[in-house]
Length: 395
Image 1 (tube, rainbow, N blue to C red):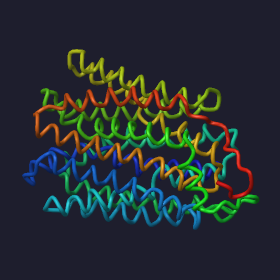
Image 2: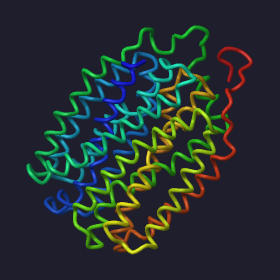
Image 3: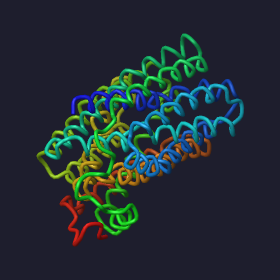
């Protein structure tokens, strides 16, 4: 178990840490290329959409052939995507590299694939805790990588910074070998459910649909804030160092938030944890918009949102494993995450689109608030008990 957690956490640290800093590239790239913010935002929106659409496929391949093979392919694509992102000179090429290529790469190097291994290799009594540890590693990656990326952009230029990160992404390849499972994925004794039966069962189950609806909101909120907050703060007259520190604080406090959510998931109803997280996010955004904007208020908001940032991940995935078992955990987790990424697509793209149309991010902030209340309400009726099957493979 220790090897699985260490290697899984290290992969997530790299994959999530690199992507969390993409908002730092918005202004230097658009200014040098002469693009609108919507051009950049649309590419990252496509990235999130491609990540979500490829997620169930990557998860299914990991369940069947082994996560380590999917992770190696994802690491290679990640490095290639960062390099071609730096070389892109048109909006279409930028969307293909920063959007499509990196999105597919992230589907094979992040939570759905890693959590499938954890669910199969960690005792159910410690599963939520283990997922919290891995999510906390992704948060630490944000705290670690964002200042590094900011320093690389300032000292080497934005293009060279992407080349360096491309080399760093290749470190995921040897780490993937530490996630080789002792038995073929999905071969556990007594589990004979087919892929089709698993999919029909999941989509017919109301709690699965409610979880996916809530996760849509999670994606909308965090990706809008992560990509557009640096530019929002600059528009309000605050220096770029404020945005860098804010993103660092989100990453730092997210370590505690995700780990805490994993621990609480062993003791409390996970649906109640999810509802509380979404409500607190909406409250934090309201207070942030109403308070005078100063570096101190930004840092307080960032720390608060950090506690709530990816803390939805451990309880959501633990509920999926609890309800449906672990045979197709990566695939089902990828399907739930698809909803998250549809929300991410809308959040990042709508942020750029409405900014270009109105000259302000205000409307998107208030949409985020309303969606948070909606997500809290839809998570409350979720049933967490294991699904009753009349026979092996029955839907």
